[in-house]
Length: 158
Length: 140
Picture 1 (tube, one colour):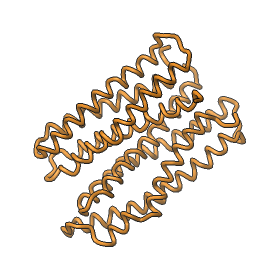
Picture 2 (picture 1 turned 90 degrees about the vertical axis):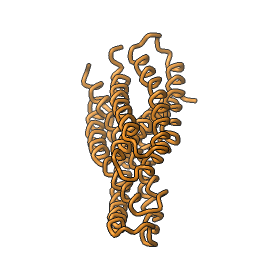
Picture 3 (picture 1 turned 90 degrees about the horizontal axis):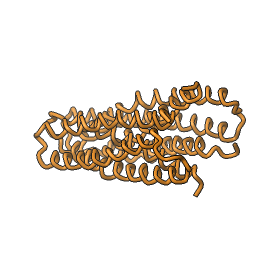
């Protein structure tokens, strides 16, 4: 197997880990949002952490091997689809990071209420679960990564 | 429709199927032996029906479409392997859904979540091998 195929396979593996991890996190976030009790909310938001290693490893693999592939195939960083992909990728990572911090604060609050044996989410926890900014950041991050996948496959302007 | 469109939805379907399978395996393993596993069992069934089934359909349908538009010769190992893994996926999803339903009905039993966790962990590995084989197109 030549270098190009190795790089491509590892680059695609990174995309599977990154977006697949995002799907896992989104599924658990939705499960948490549909729960009433702090115990269940804390449980599902706690499970979101399982996705973190996959997303981090996937991000590193995708970016590092993507840049290596650019050099290997004589593409240019100024090619529209590559430049746009990089911008959208970084924006997606930043949105995911900020959204993740807000989700972590929500999880800590849910864990605190669960430890106090509160059965129904209070107003603060409900407000955090419905926080439109946190939702926009998390879903926007996922949409950005799907857009990058599209750019990688269509290669507009190539 | 451009061939890239079919490939995009095939790859996206496979990635969502991978994420859904990982979520189901995680929930099943986390739910074993819990005092009140019913919310986890319900979430497991919901992910299988709402996420895994549509993702499986998209992976297969757009995979067939991509292959038919690709003008590849018959009998390519990497193509056949991808289809075999996708075929097995339907069985995994349906058996897991049946087991999740049973888990909801009898939440104290441990074997249903154990079986769901085992099946989906195994299928996760199969999906990883499939994307590797299909990306490298080896052995041709």
